[in-house]
Length: 222
Image (cartoon, rainbow, N blue to C red; front, side, top):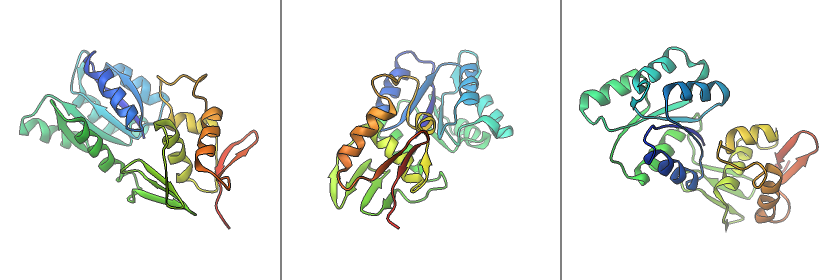
């Protein structure tokens, strides 16, 4: 998933962002409300992870703004904050958050909550199959013909995008939008290079087709 992480703690923010990337997510880290709004105007996010106590205001105000005007907002919102009182949790959920997690927290619980939120993205099934290919979003596992295939986080994210649209051309721009983040180096991890690796790992016969000048397509047996 493409995530927006709004966290102003200069130690915690990068740590959580790195952990989320290892868990196969693309993450953009920002530290202020204004930066979060700017990011949402430019990028479509699956989930926004929102801290509440921020240098330029309260994260609750941002959530209320997203709820009132959903034009540029993450599809789902998860509050991640030190405010642990029951009243604070109620306020966060009533403001429009889909989930609420208090600090200190366990990273595995954060990952699990994101998987649960992901199952609400109008895609209730975690396991997706196309012919003999199987991708499990809950466990980040991929199999072909029953054989497990080890993918990097970025390769998994690319395949996740393609398996959402079997038989349809997905442009390189859409792959960059949904599977990359601001930390990715476009020269060492370009869609073309990673797609070549992904094809090789998926084996024969080839599953992913390059459509010259248009993008990539996951083949489906007629």
